[in-house]
Image 1 (cartoon, chains in turn brown, purple):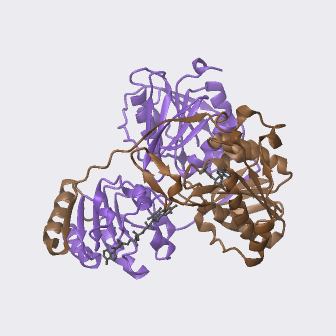
Image 2 (cartoon, each protein chain N blue to C red; image 1 turned 30 degrees about the vertical axis):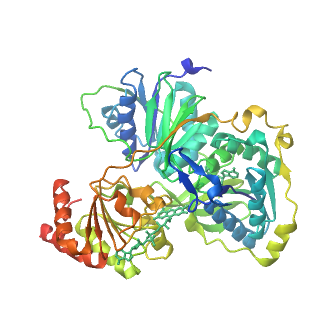
Image 3 (cartoon, chains in turn blue, orange; image 1 turned 90 degrees about the horizontal axis):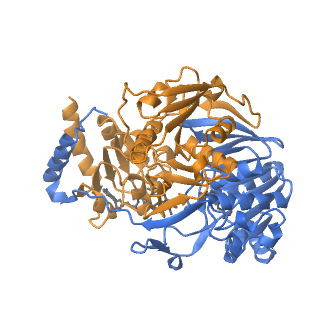
Length: 269
Length: 328
Ligand SMILES: Cc1cc2nc3c(=O)[nH]c(=O)nc-3n(C[C@H](O)[C@H](O)[C@H](O)COP(=O)(O)OP(=O)(O)OC[C@H]3O[C@@H](n4cnc5c(N)ncnc54)[C@H](O)[C@@H]3O)c2cc1C
Ligand SMILES: Nc1ncnc2c1ncn2[C@@H]1O[C@H](COP(=O)(O)O)[C@@H](O)[C@H]1O
């Protein structure tokens, strides 16, 4: 099975510092890592390959340093990586990102399955997966939590949709987006690590795709949504009474009072 | 095509088992407010069985409802919905399309936007119309630290909007409107099969009125039972921080936060939760927040209405007593 995994490099969100005056994150304050959900996407691909064989290609669009992400993907089980990198790709929204990714995927050649993470921790839209599927004209299933059955022609999965879990079958070629629940990503293996260090990562720039993409389709130009302004949300006003352990009775009385005011009482919902 | 060719505001309503998801009503209420100054037609589009109560959409603010009627919409099938929605959107040409950011909405909307090759803003928490009549879509970014104000240069301008962000308008039984019933234009697709619903404990934490949540200050799975007892007495549900979900004390369905559920209950009781930004992102809009933590410097206290610097193992039994008495 020919599997393409979509991977994005993101700032380390639990370390990154935030300048709340300017409303920007200080990208230098923290390193970068693979979007955590994309590790689940990659692990899903590795498990499928272990069952039915095939090849895993990790694809990322990002600045030149995102090459590191692809090396890590190879260390974790991808066979090869492709980096889409060009100033003309920069500033892309989800439309522009998925449009570019879809055309790169077509250029890679015939494939059976595309796997994306459920969302990115910096973009947090969960849109790139389904949008890429639409631009590729293939079906997709979002929020996949379990792989139930894999054949050469279809994938049977469990996914979160509506307010429950449903079992669905995807006829290939298709795309899935996976949640964190689907698996525990394994650590890089030593032999893969060595290969990852040495392997050549092809870098595709705009000219590689210029037969299928126009400059109006990519990067900032190809982005219909544009951020006009950034504001800082006002802090939520709270009563903010804090009691010490010795003041327990007072605290309990305050809780009783607030629940009475808000008409929250036992047994009610 | 220019801005003039696109008119009106369309809410795509989600339905399940013949019931319309309430986020659609919230969006209609917001839509009415958006067009107050510069009136525009408000439309709703829903795909579902014939028995669907589409009048409810009129009563909440729609001037016109398009109802694509058929039993084929009884399963969560984004592809069949997309196939039926796209021709309608091309025909009606609304200037604005709003969709609830439920799991289904977040899976369907990007397909629709890509099929129309227009922009889509995810998970908005507010909407405005600017002086040029364009939609300003406001969404939190970077773990809710900032609000991005986004405009779309293509049409329709599409956005998904969080559930429970806007208040639900009361139905107005006098409100008049037109209901247009359509046959599905595409009756089947064979690329994704919906096989079955998997039965499991249904907890709908996003809609709970009371959430009693535990974090790493809760030492084991068994201790969660104590929180559960209080939650039950209060008619609520239990919540958890990511760390205890990862530790396996409780299922992911209970996780509150950035990568879990966003909740907005009337009362949130946080026990042994430090209040990391990623946790706060999911609960800081709760109406009332009570925090119990042994560490006086825990950030959770900064957003609490009432905080107790203490051991929840001591506080919770007392609360239980108080609220149990109330029910008796
Ligand atoms: C991309 C990303 C996404 C994330 N998503 C989420 C998410 O969705 N939800 C989420 O919750 N986290 C999320 N996190 C993790 C988050 O950063 C924190 O690690 C987590 O919220 C901390 O959980 P905690 O408060 O339970 O644990 P801790 O931070 O360890 O806090 C435990 C607290 O319990 C107190 N305590 C200990 N014993 C007692 C006692 N007996 N009585 C009272 N208090 C006691 C301690 O003083 C301490 O403050 C995410 C992180 C990242 C990077
Ligand atoms: N620049 C990118 N390059 C490759 N894959 C991406 C990129 N951006 C997003 N993705 C994929 O799309 C998923 C959803 O991203 P998002 O829509 O940004 O939340 C991610 O988990 C990745 O699998």
